[in-house]
Image 1 (cartoon, helix red, strand yellow):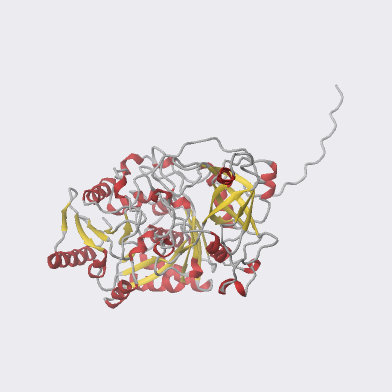
Image 2 (cartoon, helix red, strand yellow; image 1 turned 45 degrees about the vertical axis):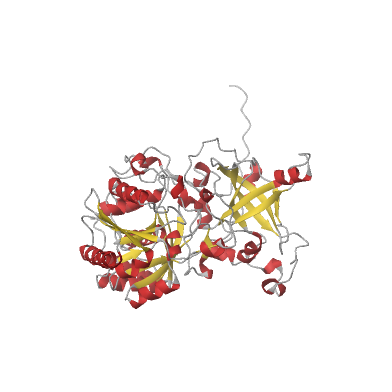
Length: 562
C-alpha cells in the first residue's frame, strides 16, 4: 500500500452562536407596504461579522435573526393554498391620510355587522345603537351584497354602540424616537462642494429591536453605551466596520454607531437602498450636554436612558408611505393617550388606538364598558408585505408580547359572565389569540413560569385539529393562574398567521383602521369577517365613501362573523 496519510489534528470545538441567516436575512422587513420589493442576493457574511455577534444574545434577539426550523409544520390543508391576490383591493393614493384628523377623535367610524354574527346578542345591541344614532342625526350605509350591513358613523359614536359590560382590550406600548439622521464617517470625500460631501455622508438609521436585551423597554430604559441593536442603515454597506455619528445641529448630545454585522439587504422601491445591520452604540469621548436642561443637568449622558437620548437626537418614525418628514406635532399625534412610558418599545404606533381621547375613555367607563391593557411592541415586520402567490409562501414575523395577571383576571371574569371581548387593533387580537393557544398547549402540564414560549405560524390550526380546545373561560383561568404563580405577568412571542379558516377563540369583534391591500392585516380582517370576499366588499364601501386609510386614517368597528 501507499504511504499512510498523516492523522489530522483534532478539530477545536466551535462555540454556538446566533446564525446570520435569520428571518430578517431571508425576508428583510420594511416600514411601508405599498410597493413591491425587489429581490437581490444576500451579502455574504464575513468572518469578522460572525465574530462580532459572539456576544451573548437573549432569546428574543436570537429569534429575530434565526430562521424558522425546517421541521416547522406546514400550513393546514386549504389554508396554504389560498391565493394572496384574493385579499387585495384598489386603494387610491388620494385616500391615504398623511395627517391625523383634528382634533383627535374627530375621525369617522365604519360599523360592519355581518349577516351571521358569531355573537348574535352583541350584533343586535350594536345594530340597535347604530339605528338610534342614525335616526337622531342622519347618516349613510345599508346592506352589502353578502347580507351584512355597513353604517357610516363618527368615532365619537363608539360608546353608544358598545353594550354595557363589553370588554375593550388596549395595546399600551409606546412609540420611541427610533429614526435618526447620521453621518457615515469617511464617506463623501472629494464629492464636490462641502454641501455635496455632507449630502453623500448623510445616512438614515432606524432602530428596530435590541439584540443585547430581551425586552425593548428594558433596553430603552438603560444607558446607551455598549448596547447592540438591530437597525436599518440606509446605505449600501457590504461588510462590517462602518462608523456613523449622530449629531444633529444644535442637539444637546451625540451618539456613535459601529456596524458590527451586515445581516441582510433592506430594499424599498422609491427609497434609498440600505441594509439591516447589528450596530453597537457608544458615546463620543467628549460627549456632554451642550445646553444643560432639567433632564440632563443632574445626569451625565453615559447614565442617561437610551429613550431620553434618542428623544434628543431622533424623530418620530412615521411610515414612509406618508411621504413627509415628521414634525413636533407627530410626537403627540402618533402616540395613543393611554401609552405607558414603562412600556416604550414600538417603532410604529398601534394606530387603532390613536382615535381615543380621555373624554371618550371616560364616557366608555361611565356607560359600563370594561377595559384591560396588554403590551405588544410593534416592529417593522408588522408591515412586511405579502408578495408570495399563495399563503404558504409567506413567513410571518415573530413579535414579543406580555400581559398582566390583573388583565387576565378581568378577562376571565368577563368570560364567566358572557360579556363580549373587543380588542382595539390587530396587535391586541394577536396577543389574545396567541395567549389562548399557548394556554391550550400548556394546559396538560402547566409550569409556574412567566415564559409562555413561542407560538408558530400554523401552531394554532394544528392544536385545534389535534384535540378539543379549551373553553374561553378555561384558557383565561389557566393563564391567570400561570401569571399569578410567575409574579404577576406572562411573556411570550407569536408568529401566528390569522387568515380565513382560523378559529377565533377570544375575540368577538375588533376596532381597527383600514389596512393596505398587500398586508397580513388584511388576512386577519378577512378571517374576522368570514372570508376575503366579505372583507373586500367592506373595503370597497369604504373607498366609495372616501374614508381615510392607513395609520392616520379613519376607524372601523367590525363584528366577527360565524
